Length: 275
Image 1 (cartoon, rainbow, N blue to C red):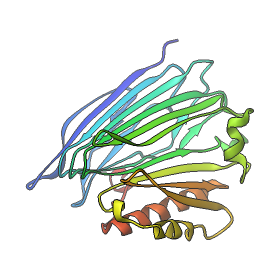
Image 2 (tube, rainbow, N blue to C red; image 1 turned 180 degrees about the horizontal axis):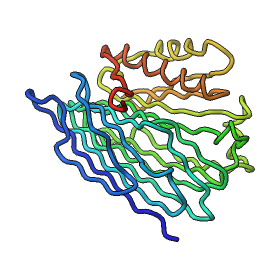
Image 3 (cartoon, rainbow, N blue to C red; image 1 turned 135 degrees about the vertical axis):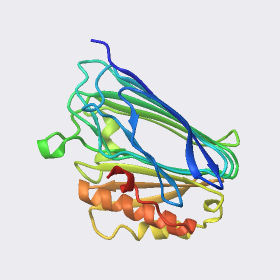
């Protein structure tokens, strides 16, 4: 059977009277958005998949533009579950644009590839000089409580981030349990949880190497390992590996708190408009 072809398109603008608001919005199943909420600092928008998750053959395209002066937090109320694909591949294509003076915080819930799933994600983020980005990507072993640890067929992603047309980050990975692609993930923990958090901001450009020490200091126990690397002139990428889910979520929250403290801003509550 054919999969679903879904889409989501948002244009986020700003005005002195309204703060940040959705100037345009459109979506098609299985994508939807909750009612947005302006907290005085950022517009909180939850991307919602009202179905059981992503199935083989599904194709979803997301396009979000953040205009000058707009501050947006994109999140989701629940994990993204990739279901058994019956040999078919699910595709997610994401395009984000951040104009000068705009700020975009992409903070989704975790991704859970289930037994037999095949999924591919392509993300393109285009930024102007003076734009700001906090971008989270995650990968979990699967439904660990059900005994599924890295039993999906394939989980692949490609990410490009450019600033003023200059490439500052390019990542390509295809994880297939049973081959050498798993070696790095399982080197420390048999059921490792992985996250990458990218920060691109005019303020982050001036952070010196002590940010790496601050990140490493968040590894307060043997369940979490963190490290930071400078991007090509415009920010940092922080990697996180955890041995289990609770430590993973705590680690992500700690990194985000550190980032917002460094940026000198109040961290928006991603759960506020999920109520």
